[in-house]
Amino acid sequence: MRSMNGASKFDVEVDRGHKIISPGDAPEAQAVVARIDETVAGLDLGHMEFPNKPYVHTGLLDMDTLEAGDPLIRFALNPDLLASISRYLGVVPVLHQIGVWCSRYHPSAARGSQLFHCDAKATSQVKVFVYATAVGAGDGPLTVVDAAASTTAMKKLDYKFRSRVSDPDMLAAVRPEEIHPLVGPRGTVALVDTSRCFHMGSRLIEDSALRVLALFQYVGPVAFDSSSRAELPFSRFVGDETSRIERLVLQGG
Image 1 (cartoon, one colour):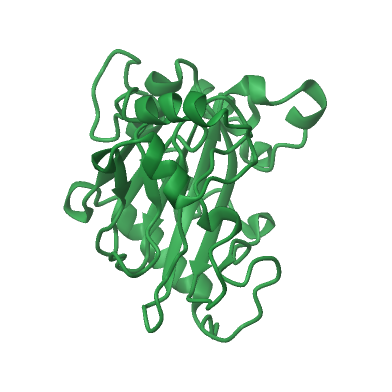
Image 2 (image 1 turned 60 degrees about the vertical axis):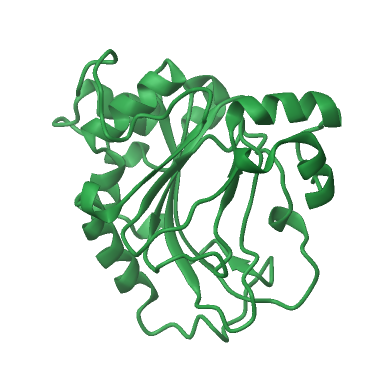
């Protein structure tokens, strides 16, 4: 693994809290895109039932079906990616989740994760998104507020985690140039600290294309107590050939 003091294309500025990388600069994401295509092949995503939210399905991948050599696991353990996330968090992260998500248009008013919010899993975390479809302004892009601006907005709004913030309230608390829709072509990689950055997404306009992506969630080891640590979903991949860093990422110690 690269040094915590090195530099990588995946590095995220602390005050910004997010970064987007073009497909040409992240060729390792192509195997992830192909794996997503395989996962959703044969699914009628435009008409299938979405179990929890009518605008996004977050359970298209069964994590129990993953194997050690899966492209999703190889990407999740990419040394440059892990080094960048470690530098950002100040600690070797724990891989908590891998998912394949699909967002589609729904005519109801924005609600839930379609409104600005910060995630409550940890005080700081990194979610990595790999786009399997092109995402334009009308395709419900993940829209992120810079981390420093989000900190200021939390104080202005007296924000409580798990609550939602309307667009007018957010625009009253931050400047428009501090809000960034993360658009890009197929193969784009986005890194976002969803605990420190206000964000919202999946607001697709009518007749927009489906938005399909992979999600990789990394948190610090302090997000888990000793009982939950034993149940981390990727600890089963630890073996005799697993490096020390990979062991920390997969099972938290």
